[in-house]
Image (cartoon, rainbow, N blue to C red; front, side, top):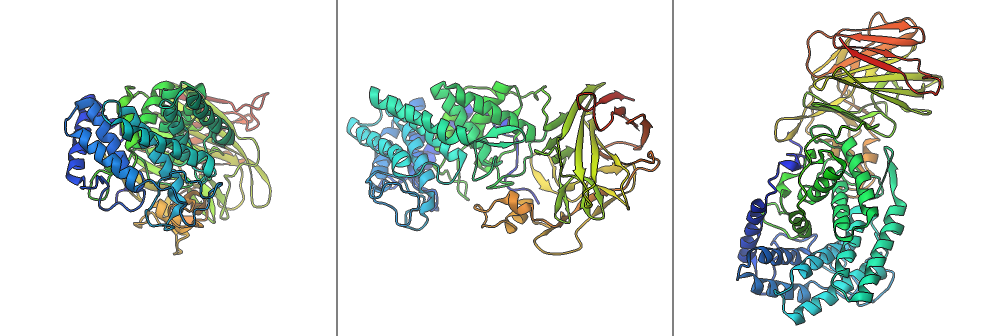
Length: 610
């Protein structure tokens, strides 16, 4: 079974002017086939996200006219714009809308659904989207839209901005992408306003960004990020926020957008596997955006020198939003316009900078979470998630069902590159069930094809084993599909186990249930509103790779060694050298220093290829 939303890398989409002209030509023909006598350009199946969709198609027609001067387009733009002004601009309060600061303001807004009171919670982002469609259309209106209609439409755009920033609470869904989008709408609107009014709108937009978004960033993996639906980062909406930051910087030149975008881009680069797989978020854990992400990934990938285009998008939305039948939907039309306008080229080489929360070389990558526990491991085209045992999640030694993984002190990291190898040593203080402090040293070494992981800890009671991951998905070329198999070898015993218990809180990788579906089943609220990251943490047990200790290790330690990916005979021996430990495998020799570190507490590691 394939994962629905993670398909091809976004940098594989053709981005030549000719390719974009073909896309716009298709939009134009679909629009003429759909245009009603009233001027409506909405898809027949459109119910949700409807308030801006006809206007979005209108803006694409106006943009296409700028490039092609197709004589059919001026009349279509005039008719469809008249439809929006007549039928899709609401000025009476939507019954039940919970986020108003001013009642009966008479200001215009766009509805998420048309039925009064049916689902008013979505009106704020729908109005942001309508404002963005509006400013794109205003940008293309010169010589196309009659003066009177243009003036009425500009007043409507003014009203959208006022409703978003005066009549309602700002960013009521705590969604960074929506909030930054609103700021972009204000900055673009200012270009169409007279001097003092333009300066006022621009100043307010910048103030909202600094005070309501930048000042409330949330930290994850050492990076300060715009909050998304109550969390730090969502793998669907985060790249959309990156695109908004790119557009904000393009049109304003304000360095705050570039700096925050660089931070978000470096964070995304570190959490993204080599193959472009990403997992996790407070709104969706597997759903991925597509063309909406291209602008930000391309723009900031070039700025930071990283191949962010490896991000796997939903290719069903390769160029614009579509409905189930593939028909164009005007939602997100503004992003297609900006993507075409921006001439930045993809940066296709991996960043050479060492990142604390990532180890990457060749086709191997490990993305680490805030606690420096692997969040995703990739080797030989297979993606591994942290496994779960007795409600504890991660990679690490297990003693009597208790996972030694959660740090109880400073986590220290050392990166080494030598002889074509890349390595990361992670030293964690943890406590066991009896509150005994243990120092665990995790060594990750890769030659770009395979990944070796060794774990050493002072002697543990009982019969410990290493929880070595949950094989979850694999690359089959242009798609990511589910798997429960793994190309893994251990220097000790190795077994792949599956939960014996049944129920939503036990995840069996052999089932057709996806991680996201399982996470939402455990979340507090329904899909799309519940937090799948939080829900997933309620998982009791999962499919898991379990590796036994390596025989012949020094008497004072338990040592484990696992190789992910291809290779012949796997051998691993551990030798005590003073307070340090030397590890020999068929591929490398590593000397790991005392867990206490050097005189400054820094981890010590030397590495050489065999």
